[in-house]
Image (cartoon, rainbow, N blue to C red; front, side, top):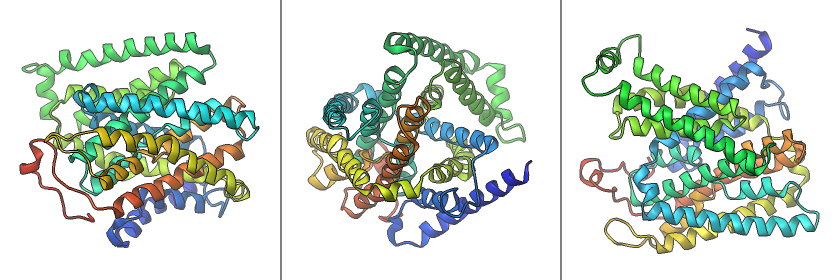
Length: 409
């Protein structure tokens, strides 16, 4: 390994270790760990201390970390939720958000304030479900009614912007991009059918997988990684974003293990959150040009306001119409929490701006401002949501069997 790469990896690892330590001593863990990872990336990156850089080797680790982040996000989504009332409402809400975003950037583009309006519009409608997942888990909200509402809006707010990005920012044109997306969907469906055949109950291969799950072979983990890398490779062949392949892998994994597997999930969490995902967040922080952000504070604030108006307000209104399993409506505090969580964005903003910069539609400075705004939403939105009171009833059967941890954990 090259000395420069080894040194960069060392500092990235140091940042990954310090972030949870600092987060743990803060009152009520109000500052999410991912925010500290981003800040650490800014500090060690090329725009501040210049002690770490993202070379091709680290870029590969970063992409794999991003893939694991979205695989776990896709795995947490219950397909029945997406096709149910909550999922349909989240879909309609996203369409409203996108319409408002297009209208806003059209006006701003005509005034010469915004360039690459399509990319900005897509970024405004995104929700960082992968980023929110560890935050919601730390706060014991994943299995609550509020958490399910956030997951619904988050799933739609990640999947549809990725599809919109592939169609509207692709080099093939809208029709060509739709055809490619269709081909990718066909491949994903074929891959999804394999587990049912290969891992059917009573098969020798399923028995082999079970027998080697706690050996050095770790076959289940390796199979998951094969699924992830295979779909990432398919997405790359079709010139689609890594996120789409990873998200599809998560959905397929959930279909293969519909009731979950605590042992497998624990091992995947260790691999992902133990190292790979922190690498993604730290390197995302390293890409933020602090000088460019500091030089355009008005643009930064304007984008934050647009995020709140375009994404937050429609989600707030939609959550007022939502009902839990018991028929109860969310109170105003919970509606604000759902809106705040749903306005949190970063990974997709990074992806969208990266595509726009590569295509020459957006400058690096503008991309840095948008990424910085996404990072700020990760800092302030979950923090504000954590300050609000919440009802912590568990969803479904989990209410009795798995009581949530005390507030602040």
